Image (cartoon, rainbow, N blue to C red; front, top):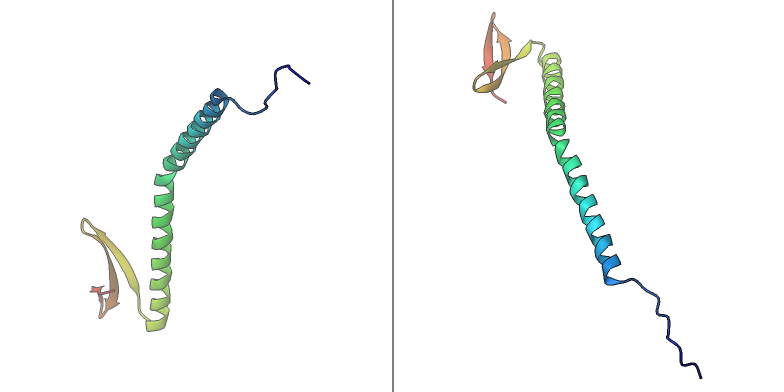
Length: 92
């Protein structure tokens, strides 16, 4: 018969709480890093959309055999078509 203490292996509550806190801190830091890059990502997405719009207007110019352009104003940007010696707003 063995009357000594039994050795139980496992993690203590303190060790488990410490791991949870470390994972929480890493999650917060990771989220902040991702969110800090969001303005750059938004600029890149806007640039990609603008590039696609320009490519479309270039293809449209070749297809219709006339010049197309973009005009910027305080109300946004507008597509233009060159017709009869003048630039005319184009609906898109």
